[in-house]
Amino acid sequence: MYAGLTIVLIYDFRNHKNSNAYNFAFILVCFIFPGLLGGLIEIMQKEFFSPRTAEWGDWLSDIAGVMVGWLTMSLFGKWIKSV
Image (spheres, rainbow, N blue to C red):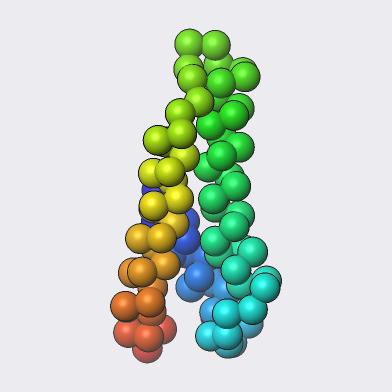
């Protein structure tokens, strides 16, 4: 799920900004936001849904999904943009 989110964010950011530059806004929107979202969801499920717990492994899996999305766009991003 986080790989898909990251792919969509990178694709949309590159098409909207018309640039492939890795600036602060790009890093914030495409990498930091999804990673923090995963951590926030873990905290919220612990606090608001009593049978659920927050797990470090789940959050690390979310971050790994962000990295897989970045890797996918790095490998196929130019091909996707030309389609």
